[in-house]
Image (cartoon, rainbow over all chains, first blue to last red):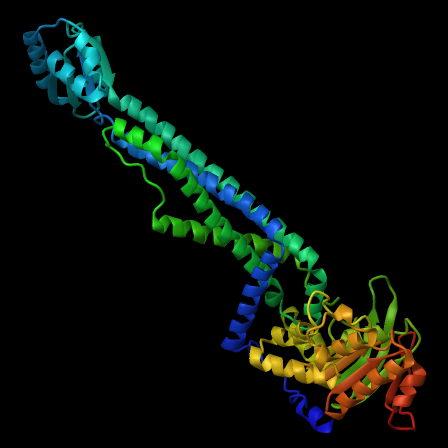
Length: 320
Length: 226
């Protein structure tokens, strides 16, 4: 009996220096927290799955919206020559008059180049591009006007206005205008996506924070005992931070899976759309780097949510 | 090892739990604190473990003036003080082994060494074969012994116990008190609060008697040994 007690002789009462935890002790504690937090999530599979589903959708929605916009931008960038003014001349204007008009325009200082498209050229192009070849065969005459495609030099505004006023011109199509509008719409939508992403990230933060808060409330006795036994605040907080980290990481994985499913569903109609645009653009999903960024961001979000909840709700065993 | 110098503790509601309390315990000494309920026994122990701070006077534990310990230093002070509670405060969702291991986990002791030390502590309280049991499967006396194993597993220089035999029948109570005596023999400073004066006297250790927060007696019973 005595020998056994002998072994337990306490260490000399030298005050233990601050931060004397070895690297090994630090690693042991982190491993402990890492696995105990995973175990806690696994102990309540339904609650965990539900929380993860909410988080996964919250993260997937802004990502999908952003992907859609990114693709729309690629599409818009491939349509129409930037800044060119198309002047549709009155039908029946004869070829010499068209050439003379083009020459007059070329002479202007604010015109860089003028391309003439005769009605015949227009018809050929239309046949090739639109797939209406059979329908066009029915027509016995060419309904298309001659078109002058004018590349402006400098500010195209006054030039477009003068062309519009010219009696020989039937209609002026000024590409830059609708491009500007499209760009404005895209910028607005992008900003909307950012706001949405921010709001949903905040929602994810609150969901994680609330889940961790409930976890803390359910383990208040354990927290109290650990503090009585001399656990540092960081040690008590750490398992909850790891819980948040796991919530965030798994939610990120789930959101990537959701995006993958949406991509599979959209693949066929998208292929048809790109075919209709002569494969002038290719729809794209998330790259590896972007996926990793999503995972890192969601893990960080989870950690932060848990940190906020833990700092707020773990009342440290403070003496009064 | 434990020194109180004119310590007073007044709770926010105006109740004076301790006043002008002075005493000192040498390293390896064992003492009982006794007195009627509300005499300040628990408050005294809570001051040692820095669960409370005194309103006046100075408490020194393990060579450290607790008044100078800042918030971030509290956990380290508590790691140097093993605590046993009347209601044992075991975590019911963990095995006996995991409960006893908790202070070592907190201290970051490597796993292999942890298992050795937990078994040594359980062996000492006679519960080695119950390490896999849930605390709820144990009797009250066994639960208290697990609580004691947890308090001493990290080999703290100071061991305090607040009414550790409060829920036990006389025979079990004497056994538990005997355990504390054994820890004192290996150099641990032991301070036990108990209102069971006959039992305390039989132990033959130093006795501090509190009354309304004041030390009214400090004596050593003549018959030594339990």
